Length: 152
Image (cartoon, rainbow, N blue to C red; front, side, top):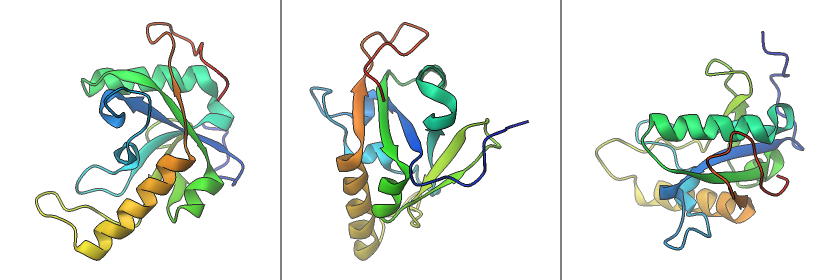
């Protein structure tokens, strides 16, 4: 049973596992697409760091990377209030695992067609705001089983 409250408080730290495709060419900065939903959905998987901690976030990030054949690079952290200030929402989704949550933007990108221009601009604005608010921490030792980087 998951003992984490369902409601997500504004002061909660929310973590996104970062893969190589989420970073710019020199791998030092996040791209806005790090917070973009896959086509046909309006959910970006994140972890409730306040309750699960950095080690758990790293282990889950590595699992997700391996399952999707991506390279795990590090973790990005935001406060729930920053997500909401960007015009998006964060909600518990413990069906996946205890501590799992989703960021939703209120816009579903179609699978085989572009978004209407006004929705694309609205989504881009939200993604930029999230990218600008997020604190990206490159993992100094991706092979390790625990987080050895700076505090999130």
